[in-house]
Length: 284
Image 1 (cartoon, one colour):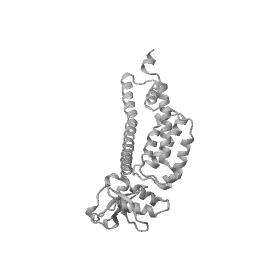
Image 2: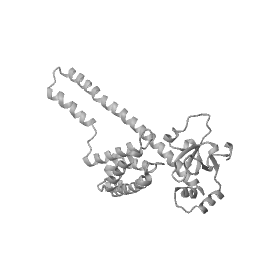
Image 3: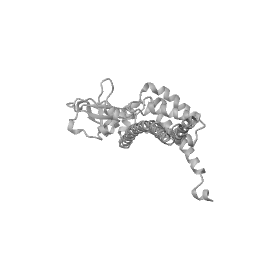
Image 4: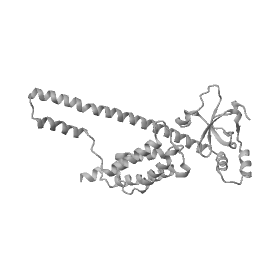
């Protein structure tokens, strides 16, 4: 085995894990793994651990120098020449031949994912602040109106005192969504809770239900540009497509299916945009 000083970020290595064959991977910087994975790294400061991103699934592991060895081109070719089985280990060795483009894509996906989680958290905080602000507005306005009416007239008509606040309340209340748009928004919330939770953890036991949600979306033929704009479900689907690691994705192919939905809905929005009159045509 090589010494600690011989390992650097970007080195292709063979890592030993108890109960598994030695597996090819690449050493990555801790900042280039998902935040939820990073939080699970052993906290022992005295332990000298390297972060390994395994081929081809982008799973992660922390390995001590004694459990690592450099994986040379000769080692890779010797294994592939002797291995006749087509399995994940063989795929891992094939990817180890030239993994740097794949590794860069995985790193970018991680950064996009963490940025998406931060955006979701920020939006949630904004929504909470907005709700607090909106809930306080009617009280201030009713107090102000009551004081104004009292100055104008000691005993305003009962009908006037009841009707005026109702009119202003309707102005401040968001226009209710139609049933179809509500349903699309519910699907968006289901996906967001399962795939883009604040803690960044995607639970494998939730994936069967999310497969059903994807099937509903794929079979839904009445999606409109307005529904896409109001619910922002396309934004959630895009983030799912960018996730670096999804449980059971080899079974349900969530990332691939997200890409198909993105293209499908993008075409709907593009078609709607192309049919809208330009400023010039509108003025004629």
